[in-house]
Amino acid sequence: MSFSHAKLAQDVRKYAAYRRTLRELNALPLETRLDLDIYSGDIRKIARTAVYGY
Image (cartoon, rainbow, N blue to C red; front, side, top):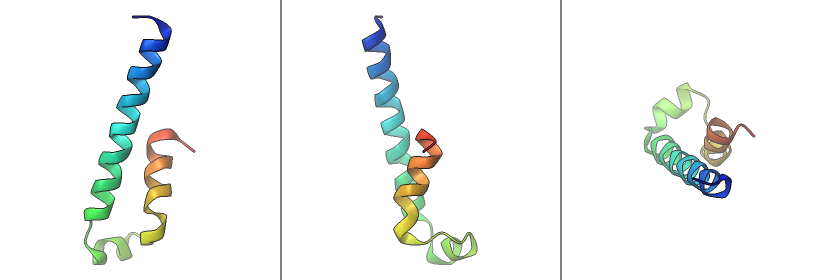
């Protein structure tokens, strides 16, 4: 597998992980999000940081 194919495969896996993390955070009950101090508006940022590191 060439470098560009390997990079593309890695990007696809990371995007899938991002979407999965986003879905799981959105599925948390409100009480749980409040206990964890997760504001609904920050869920995308939290998921992005968890997967991509920035």
